[in-house]
Length: 287
Image (cartoon, rainbow, N blue to C red; front, side, top):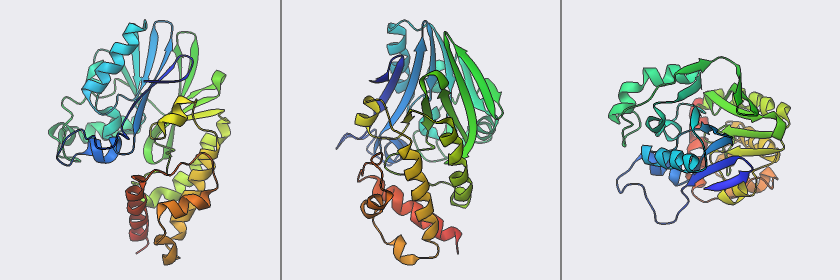
């Protein structure tokens, strides 16, 4: 558990050398723990907002127990998007309001059977999958105790991304819209849209940014600067250029990071696999 700011909790797991969630191939290790993953909570008095419920119900129960021990009595869950490592623990909050944008709710509902059987992205299954109880379109203002928060739907990383903005603190909880070392590209055809929508984040003028995938040391120290937005823009530009310049596609992630010119990007070797997958996905869309 990390405390990047007053009233803010970061529940972090992963980046532990030699440790695996399970011995067989699984989405928890490959998509989350190998890269490091955090879920967040904001607490105001007895009210807590939980931003994503982590990679398992056990993780989520731990989150709830910690927050209850610190005085939280009512919980609101906000889902950053539909990907499994963000919704897996929601059953630990099945007696609470679960908020998501309309697109997240649509995707979870359509894939519910496959997610609960473990056939969508392989094991482990998420059963039961708790669906959102409240949805919004575009923006939603929330009152959490004495705190005013804004939920914003955007299309970055996935077309159902929800970010949490805390205006008074200039603090942005960005989900997977930004990552350190680099963004994961699931929808390469949408990269130009993702690139354009990063301006949505910049217009907020955040003082600090807390991503779900990033360095635990940076998160513990308070998070990233807007340099992470600029670095993500440069990385997307690089990926798009690989369509026309095959030589760029051969660069390693370490070599690419050196061109991003950002103190907010920290090379982490397991992201080499992510980068190689990104390059191959982008080049396939150009064929």
